[in-house]
Length: 243
Image 1: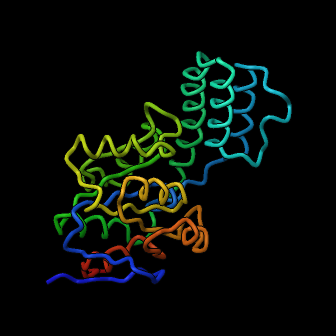
Image 2 (image 1 turned 30 degrees about the vertical axis):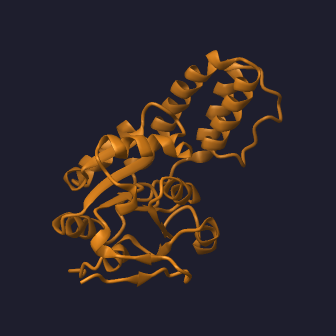
């Protein structure tokens, strides 16, 4: 028997749990909270970028995120025919992010209910994929620290491209390569970028309010469902929580 859930936002969206084979989840803000020192990370990134190319003094702002700095600088350089700098920026910005992510990873804790929820999802035969913009070193560290690596079928993290969540084709290619149907997939994340990426590949999207974006931001972006914590995901896919 199929159990049909209407979107928490109302409207015509429904979720058939029997049709869900894969769940793709973000890391920071969804499973754990990484309190990254963004102020110093951004200051260091600006100095690095200005050392590669003489950007104007007002080109970057402290209100820009690291992702926005990356996008802004690489787009500018591409437009003026200085593509040769982009690879260097990708490497150096990733190293800066890695350093601050690792510092935050050593101090963080996993959100309540995440461990038991991951265990129950895998026990129900649902493939779970970790999809994060965080770097390999901090991701591997967190997977080992909380002993959760075995719950994930695949782990996709920042490696080839600093800002790869802005390019849904990267995820689409990885899913196709591994025989995963986006139409039978849920994407769970705390940022509007997670939602936009999920919608771009044709998956159902679930916003979670434990991280970067609040309810209204996730709703405005078009999340099909919004949950307050990762454990609420079990209700959507018709798994009785054992906590």
